Image (cartoon, helix red, strand yellow):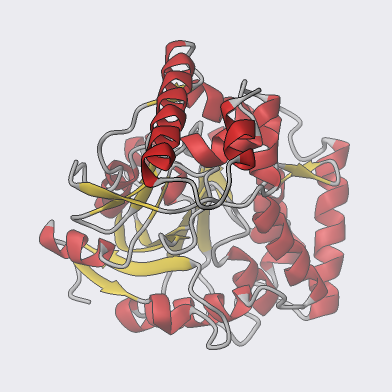
Length: 372
C-alpha cells in the first residue's frame, strides 16, 4: 500500500507526531522525485528571481488548476499533472514581488511544450477572432483603448511602432479596426487568410520577408485605409520576432495560418528580428511588449527595447494570477524596481483593466528618455 493510500485511511484524530512523520515522508519522496527530474534534464533550478535576480524570496501557495497547457506538459515530459501541481513550487520575490517557480521546466522541456506540446497561443487567437467579430468578451478592447490613450498622453503622435512576437495581444488589431469599417476589416481578413494559405505571400520563402525589412508588405488597398478612422494610427509598424523556448513561434497556427503570416498583409506590420533592428539603426517611438514574461531574461530584453524605443509599454501576467505553465509573472512592485534602476516608470494596471474585472495582468509604462 502506498504512503498516499495509508494517509487517506488514517483517522482524523491521529496524533500530531504521526502527521509530522507523514509530512516528512512525503517531503522526502517529493525531494527524491525532483532530484530524479533534475538529473534527467526534465526540470531545472531557478534560484534567482527572473526579474531582479534577487535570491530573497518566500514560498507562496499556488496549486494551479490543470489548464490546457498544464495538461499538455505530460506529453513532452515524464511528469504527471499531479506532480506539476505539487513539485513546481512557487516563490514570491521579496525585492520586486514577482512570482516564479523553482524548480520549473528546463529550457529543453519548455521549448518542447511551446512548440509541440501545445504550440498555439490560445489567448492571442481568441483576441484576433474577437476583433473580427467586433466583440469584447475578454475586455481586451478596453485595455487597448486606455493603453493607447496613456501612450499618446506620454508621447504624442506616434509614427513608428513595434510589438514583440505576438501580433494580436498588443495594439495592432486596434489600429487595423480603426482604419476601416467592420465589413471592410472582415473582407481584409478573409483576403489575408487566402493569401497566406496559398503561399503567394512568400514566393521567396519566409526569409525573403525578413529581408524586406520595414518595407510595407501590406496591400495597396489596405494602405489606403491607414489613418481613415477615428484613431490616429502609426504608419510604420514592426513585429519584432525574438525567439524564446518560453514562447510560441511561427508554428502558432489557427485555421492553417501562422499568426506571423498575418502580420504584414492584415495588420500592416513588417516582420523583423532584433539583430536587424540594431544593425539598420531602426528606432521606434513606442514599443508594446505583451510577451516579455515569456523570456528567461525579461529585463535584459526590456533594456534592449529601451535602447531603440522612446517609450515601452509592458503588459504581462500578474503574480496574483499565476499558473504553472509559466516560469514567472510580474508583481505589483515591479515598477518600483524599475524606478530603482534609474528608469521613469508608471504602473497602469488599475487604469487599463476593466472596472468589472479582476486584475490578471500587470501593465506599466517605461522610458529612459522621458519623464512619465
